[in-house]
Image: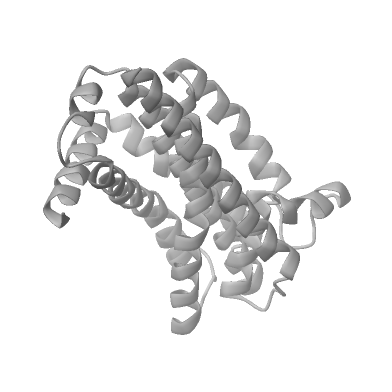
Length: 246
């Protein structure tokens, strides 16, 4: 099983690497946001820079998974290779696990510039324990956006998936409070953010790297999003499977 998973992951990474702009693009926007908004404005403030870096990590996790799984899966579904792969005796689990590993690898690549910029150009800092907590939180917050991407990818054709991912991208970032420091967003954003997947995710990240109080509502919201998006993704996959073999 492990060998099959690694084979599928390697195939996905090779396919992605054949379009370099997809790899570069996943790392560009978070890094550009760090350079444009974090370094010049809060780079000299250790607390603000640390929180801002956590926000940009959340931004990168959202953007990478939304487009990698949403657009990537939708594009794979229309390729002649996909129906053949579905007939292989290995089943769906190795393909899903391989796609998950390749997506996590691409996400790690997109996070690397953010971490390097924070470490070299700002006064952001975390303790070893906070770094481990942040790494764990990053893995947790990736889940709803992976599921959101899968739901989009399995329910829409490629052109529609691109549009939906783009339409969701900035409203989720702004509405979740990723563009502002903790507690400084407009009132309606502060009220709405904890109940969006982005807002609940960034609050988990803020709590991991600092003294930000994590409220139960944010945690419950994140769990609710994961359960809901998992159900939608499973429904979309089964519907697509049924259409192919009906």
